[in-house]
Image (tube, rainbow, N blue to C red; front, side, top):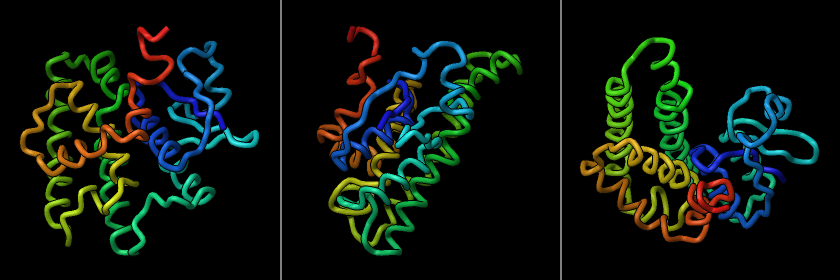
Length: 211
């Protein structure tokens, strides 16, 4: 397997954590280091990550995660109970489908370069949508039937691997996370686990200063 990603690509970090949790070996390919146009030949969407498998390419992190769960069902990243499993998926989709797309790099660049929005206003945009999303995520954890140590269980999984990279992104943009003790509490239990530690940006081969 070849994972085309980038050290600061949070969607790619989700996949790296999942691969680590499942113990699946992969080759890391830094997409930005490829020749101009080469990555589009791999993944016409042009977005990261993309997973090369058996001569085929899977784009979009959610599709990749679903593929990994189906091909490597153990250990499962999803709760066994169907209702809790749906809640974990809904939690994760709020991150992957609502928070992240509004705040990703190409959106911020478009706001600045095409819409003439200043850097301070782009930061306000970013922090606004983080707050809207994190308020909902914190409330979701508060209403769980059990105070699990991780998002939806006694072991980290689908929801946690979405949450931790998004919290990392929020810190990069100086978002105030004081109002989210449940989210940051889960994060504190994840960050030192080997699968999460090895997935972090600073542990990737294209991270500045590692070469």
